[in-house]
Amino acid sequence: CGLLAAGCGVFPEAPAQDDRQSDGDHSDHDAAHSGSVPQRYDVEVLETRPHDPDAFTQGFEIAGDILYEGTGLVGRSSLRATDPVTGEVLDQVDLPSPLFGEGITVVDDRVWQLTWQNNVALLRDRDTLAELDRFEYPGEGWGICHDGTRLVMSDGTDQLQFRDPESFALLGSVRVRQEGEPRHQLNELECVDGQVWSNVWFSDDILRIDPDSGEVTGVVDATGLLPPEQRPGADVLNGIAAIPDTDEFLLTGKHWPSTFRVRFVPSE
Ligand code: DDQ
Ligand code: CA
Image (cartoon, rainbow, N blue to C red):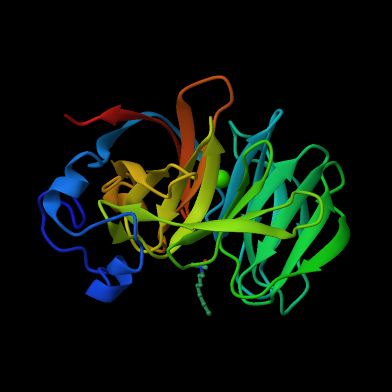
């Protein structure tokens, strides 16, 4: 069984009991959880496409004909406009040191780009990628997506924050629970049809989260997506981009040489 697959026992990141109890909606007897067992999915690979292995992928999103990608690491962070099919970098702006780029999301003619521990979000022009403004926030920045109304942001904890897409003001937050247990280290995000998909750092799980309740309603097991011959030099899975008007996604990872066009298929 996979590390976090159903029936495999305790989650490695499971917190202390009192953390659970502070979330009053979830009692700790099994009956209360039985109605909220997430649907399990496997990954069906439809196509393998090139990806720049130098990219420490932190944000990944398709808007129009462009696959926008944010990269991290100090001195190597960027925002790129790429061709979603060939992976070719069509345009790129670099972040000045010491900024460490994180998630990105497109809102109309702008692009939001988070930073990891620099406490600043960059607002950019979508066409030129040029920086327009900066907004400060507390804590870390990990993933971000736009649900059509709000920004949804992860910060490495078990929470998702909701922010105003114009002012970046904090509107609220929700704690993410899988059968009553917190899921921490939520990373790259993708907003699709009112649901939020999230990578989990150092895990091959991709979660589908109901942003209203914080409930994990689906778990994709992406174990083995990157073939063994491509693993040397590659870091973790990170990068979910929904392909508009399909049920397909592009998935990649940090320093992965490939992007995979995939579909999530229920496993039972
Ligand atoms: N995060 O993307 C999961 C939020 C953080 C990734 C941090 C990776 C640190 C790498 C540091 C390398 C220094 C040479
Ligand atoms: Ca994404």
